Amino acid sequence: MSPKIPRHRNALVATGPGELAMKRVPMPTIEPNQILVKTSAVALNPSDYKLLDQSTTVGAISGSDFAGTVVKVGDGVDVSKLKVGDRVFGCVFGANPADPSSGAFGSYVAATADLCLHMPDAMPFANATSLGMGIMTVGLIFRSLGLEVRETGLEEVEQEKPYVLVHGGATATGTLAIQILKFAGYRPITTCSAKNFDLVAARGAVAAFDYNSPTCKDEIKKYTQGRLAHAVDCIGNVATMTLCYSAIGDAGGRYVALEQYPRRLSIRRRNVKHEWVLGWTLFGKPVKLAGAYARPAIPEDLVFGNRWRELMQPLLNRSMLVPHPLEAHSGGLAALIPRVDLLRKGKVSGKKLVFLV
View 1: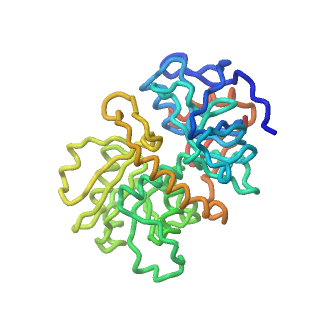
View 2: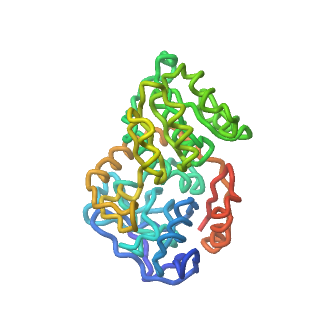
View 3: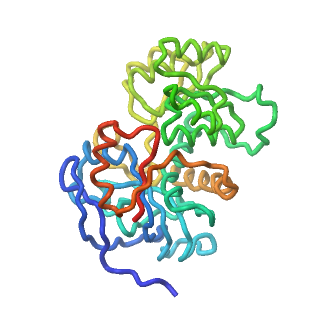
């Protein structure tokens, strides 16, 4: 028997640039490929305040990461794989100008079924809600760098595996990238502040370098013997792009960032293929943001996201993905509002903020 679903839900909506408020809003109408989830936890990401500040859609629900219980499935959803009562987590495109009702910061959320992952029985909602956006972003990183997930034993000939630099490895995306790279048969090296060396080592980094050191790029080149060909930049600015480009070996390679970078910098090395990824393309719909953030519909990205989800589910089932250090808050969605500004001002470091709904 399906649970009774109310007509309205509580949600955090944009009331102006940089401003959120709790509102009572209509329950979303789910599409054939969607599920309706009763939210148990949400997480705060840098993209949440960036969209709120830079691309404000008044009345749009904010938030990307969620975890909860399925209460309704769309007509096109395969109920043998996803059904009412399942505990799931994933991400949505919050603060979306094209679909203001789609954000995660609500007591219920409509989510794309093909991008949702099942929660293992022992996984708490707080842990699950911290993983969705990060896991899918790492998928886009793998695709951009031309990497593959190869389920070969991690003990095999480690010295022959390619290095991959994760710049900003102590970020929430960075710690996930390190783990998945290690699982997939690569040798992740990383940069972070020295205080986070233990964290990245625990997640699987084979070497860590202090990005505050003036010799950081030289240390990386020496360690990799000039053979580094893949770099992911989890921070994405002029300084971090310059460091990554300098660390890549003379033969060139690939660089991918999670933020837009000045394209004039990319011509410094013609033998480095460069790209920055935007996770909102995974939903297969147009991204109606301004400037370089606008994207046409890319249906094949949704297909890719579904395949990546299928690759990641076994890792979750085997407890092979450890969440970023968490700071969990009770008090529901209202507890999130004052902490957006802490993230905006750079006062959150080395942890991910999650909120129990």
